[in-house]
Amino acid sequence: MKIDIKFLLLLITLSCKLPEKNEFDLCKRLGVIEENLNVEKSGFYMFVDFDNCPNCSELLKSRITWFLKDYDGSVIVSVRNKKKAKLILGDSLFNKVNFDIVGISKDLNLINDTPVIYQMKEGECDSFIINLFN
Image (cartoon, rainbow, N blue to C red; front, side, top):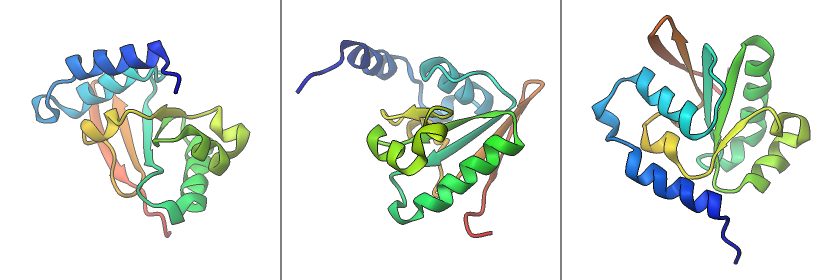
């Protein structure tokens, strides 16, 4: 099994650097995501957990497509296996999202059972949960 040294260094860095999730507010947690996952700063962030609901993959894909079409934002997909995500999303969507394979989003309590959109505007942050079945 080949271990990527960059990935290993990222894991070590993150384990040393992440404060407890209750130590800071939502905007700061989004900043940690931007910094550690190289997510482009934007006004909107959508977090999706691909590992939580294996039977929801088409619904999750449709919500990601909707978000990218209607919002100028970044999508962060929490998934343990990027190959699985590529099969679900297809090449065009796969290249438009950011992946959290180490679970930072979960550690920072930014992931929910259903997709969540966070808005960052003028130093204030807010969130809303997306209904998958609407």
